[in-house]
Image 1 (cartoon, rainbow, N blue to C red):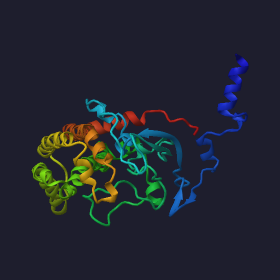
Image 2 (image 1 turned 180 degrees about the horizontal axis):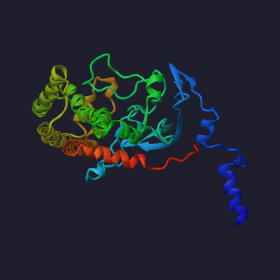
Image 3 (image 1 turned 90 degrees about the vertical axis):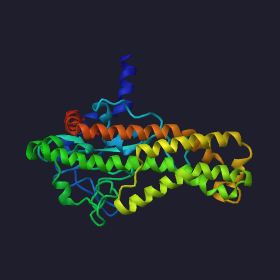
Length: 332
């Protein structure tokens, strides 16, 4: 058994384990230097190194950067298995995100990227010089999108050090700003998924048989009005989001559409795709009908998170302090 355990250890850790160096030793020896990558350099700066760490499975940026936050608000975790629309991928529910650890120049502790209040919603994003700092919400004034620079990286400090230096109010504002951008990316994604089937099916009405068209137009009238109002609000006030009343109206008409779709199965779906090469496969409609309940439950969960956070903004600071207290291994 000893020989077997030793063989397993050598397979997992290698035979030259004693020659390895922890990240702090490598930093003090000056071995952690930025490397060229794309439009800039990755690896941070000589003062504040950034290293790629393990992979983490999460559906969206909100789960990647704020894990467990809804539980700290007293809410149940987000509804599981929300489908993700991926190119050439079916039944996709999670993505693999790269975690990054950063050495705080103030306290000298290695911590995960989320403890430094920036990150992007795109899973292939890297914290490299010249890249976008985080998600750019529609509320942002054009031209003010934040870009990562060497000066920005050198100015980084972890949540705890930022709190000690700038106070609770400043940290709360910074966390709310960043949470708002990450939260918005998720909210927009869920809303777009909910509207996907409505937009797709409405375009097919004119190609259905005449006996179906009047009934379908009645079903689509209110959803079409809702999404047009959303576009108008987004254009005029930068607030193109569904309300509780609108999501309830969409549910009522979705039930009518589901009933119609089931009653005409085998006749209407082929007609809806007739003449449109992109939608010859009715699976698009089937997937949307099947997943609508799950996506709607995520919308309600996001609404509950926003409502709770407005009532208790201090929860972000409490979550951040608990998260920064977690120990980060010194080795990759």
